[in-house]
Each structure stands twice: as structure tokens, then as C-alpha cells.
Amino acid sequence: MITISIKVIAAMETQLSNGPTCNNTSNGPSAITNNCSSPVESGSIEDSKTNLIVNYLPQNMTQEELKSLFGSIGEIESCKLVRDKITGQSLGYGFVNYVDPKDAEKAINTLNGLRLQTKTIKVSYARPSSASIRDANLYVSGLPKTMTQKELEQLFSQYGRIITSRILMDQVTGVSRGVGFIRFDRRVEAEEAIKGLNCQKPPGASEPITVKFANNPSQKTSQALLSQLYQSPNRRYPGPLAQQAQRFRLDNLLNMAYGVKRFSPMAIDGVTSLAGINIPGHAGTGWCIFVYNLAPDADESILWQMFGPFGAVTNVKVIRDFNTNKCKGFGFVTMTNYDEAAVAIASLNGYRLGDRVLQVSFKTNKTHKA
DNA sequence: TTGAATT
Image (cartoon, rainbow, N blue to C red; front, side, top):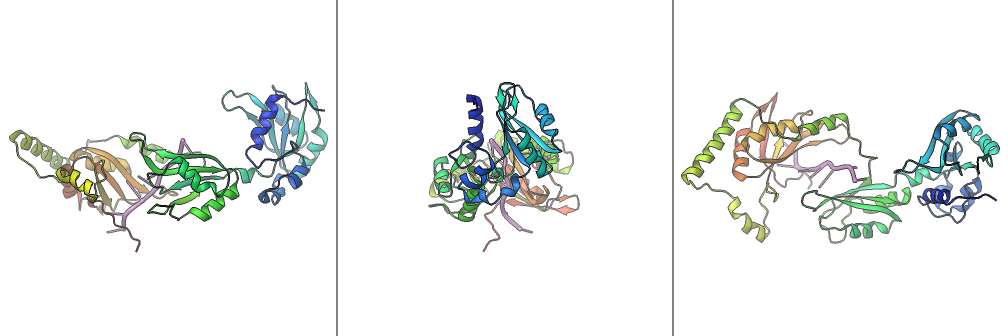
């Protein structure tokens, strides 16, 4: 009875593909109660009493026109015309959420089947499953660096249908950062995966992984954004410290010029690496330095400023509480050269920064776990 | 009082 354009079908399938497949194309109330067999969705009918999905909208209908049309029934809480992400073209359907469920019901009764241009629009309750479709995205950390995306999926697939997966890679080395994402079809699946896998060791792994719900699109606080401005070294810090650092560099130059051999553990690194022995603080890319007793508002720039004058600093990190974004009292600095790191530590350990006395040392494997 | 990581 209704001529359905290919585009609208595609749009509907896009919407449906986010949830369990239902064998009919009806979005009417019967579909909610009867046709979706998922146990999650049958319990949340309440959610859909104000929210409508409107299908078969004319191609040129705008969100404003949609809102205007449905707003004639009653007060609208929100209204969304779904568009193609790339072209911005209407996908021919949208959502209208009323304040009052009675208005939603009225809209179905009066607007469903309304002819607009060449279309006959369909108005029905939106699937109450949006909540189960959304928030099914997991953030996974502590993964073995050797784990592949396929292995990650294998691990999680026992809990449900995986929509997408990803392992974050270091942009330079291409090596896994041990962090990834799994998006499940449904939220319950994600919840089960958390129950089953959080704090568990994947087969063959030596450390347990962390599985939790991912944050929404990564929106950094303006504060975090600002601190990134300081990711480049800032080396104008006059005073005795800088002088000491400069003196050290001069010493190095003189030593090189006069052929003085300086001892450096770097010389034995190749051997110890082959033997599988870890040198504390040595991370392969440099020497990792632990800095303790930073102030809550400390940021990366202070680490650059303090350590930069002593030599090549490749990375600094202030460890922050995720929620408050305040420094947890410590941070890390990676320096390329052992000698420079050693002098920086000798110079900065016990250094008074504001009203705090810093403790600076090579990072150890210390953990407060038993 | 020795790591977070958010496509």
C-alpha cells in the first residue's frame, strides 16, 4: 500500500541494524511487545511512550518542518531528523519526543498515514531499545601488547554480537597501546562482558584486563586541552637549576672533546635485554623517571621546564584523576640518555617546588599491591 | 608514595 523508496528502506535498516533483527518492518506498538524477542527490550516499554519514530518523510523535509508539523499536536521535548553523516541529506526518517505521552499517542492517531507530497508518513513509537542499543561500547585496557584485534574479538564474542572493535596503536611504532574498544550490539551484552572479563586475565596473559563502559565521544575539558599546549618543551627557566644543567652539558662537551670515557649503563643494555633482565626505569625508548609530590594543579609544562634543561626529554606525564583532572601527586618523565637522566635526578631530587619537596628517582616496579 | 591510555 505504501511505496517505499530504496533510500527509506536503507534508512530503516540502518536503524534496525543497531538492535536485534526483527523480521517485520513494523514499528508499531505491536512490534515492541511481541516481535522483538530480546529479553532486555520487553521490559522498557515505558521509555517509548513519548518518543516517536517518523518514517517515509519527504526527502526535502527539514527538521524545522518536522518539528513544526508535530509541534501542532503538543509540546515537543526534542526532535531529530536523521541525516547522512557525510552528505547531510535526509535519510527520510526522524524522531519526535513529546513532553506528554498523551500527545505522542495523539500524534500517532492523527499524523500516521498523513500524505506529504508523494509520501505517506508513518508515525509510531520508537523502539524502546535505544537505551539498550546505545551505551554498549566498552573501553578495554591492560591488554597484552601482543593481542591482535581478532584475538580481542574472539575474547569478547562469547558475550554477544560485536559491532566494531579496535586496538589503539602507538602512532610512531605501530605497537599496541594495550587499550581498545569493543562495541556490542546491545548494552546487556556489554554488561555481561564486563562481568565476565573485567579484572580477568585473557588466556595466556600475565596481567588482568580492565573492561568498562567507554566514555562518550572524547571531549576533553578545556583545562586538559590547555595543558596540551605545553607539550612542547619550554626551556626558559633561569636560576641555579638551569645553570647546573648547562654546566653539566658543558662538562659533557668537554669530556667528548678530551676523549674522557664516561661510564654509562647504556653500554650494557644490549646484553641485559637479551638476557631478559629489566633495568629499572629503562623502558626501551628511554629512561623513565618517577616524580613524586607534585601539586594537584601541576601540569606537564612544569615537568618540561624542570627536566628539559638537563637534556633530551621525550615524554612527560602528569598522572591525573580521571574525574577531577587533578594531579594525583606524581608523574613521569622519559629521558633519552642515562647520564642526563642521572644528573637530572641528582639535581631535582629534594628540589623545592612551591611549598613541596619533590622526590625524584628512576621509576621502579613498585606497586602497593601485596 | 611508581601509569594512563577514550577510536
